[in-house]
Structures are given as structure tokens and as C-alpha cells.
Length: 101
Image (tube, rainbow, N blue to C red; front, side, top):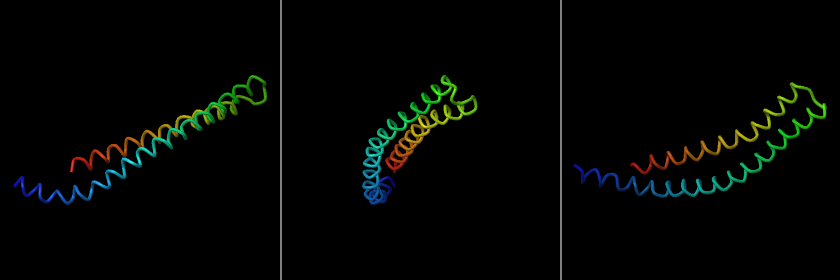
């Protein structure tokens, strides 16, 4: 029975090998591009948060606008990082699933 199972799974493994390789390449490119996006969005978020603080100190804006700008800056920093990490974990999980076949 084990020999029959191995014989039947061989073509499936052979077909899934290029899929796993493509996922690995996509994971590496996604990591490189994700790192660049993470840096750019972190800089933009920091600038927005710092600008909102300076505007409150200079009394250019009031409290609700400050809170909105500050939370938007925090979202600019946090959301891309979250999406990048979720994408990486999803690809790694899919590669693990395909590796178990």
C-alpha cells in the first residue's frame, strides 16, 4: 500500500515543485519590496505624527484635528507592516502545506 501511495503521489509532487519554487521567489521579492515600502511608509507616518505635534504646539490646529492627524500617521506606520507580515506568514504557510504533500 505504501508503494502504491508513493507511486501515485510522485506526479503530484513533481507538479507542485515549480509552484513551491515560484512561491519562494515571490516571498523573496515580496520581502525586498516590502522592506522598501515599510521604510517609506514609516517615514511618512513619522512626518505626519511630528507635524501634528508641532502644529498643536504652534496652535495652528485644535485637539480633534491633532488626534486625527496623529492616528493617521500611526496607521501609515502600522498597517503596511501588518499587511507585509500577514502576507509573508500566508506564503510560508502555503509552502509548508504544499511541502507536506
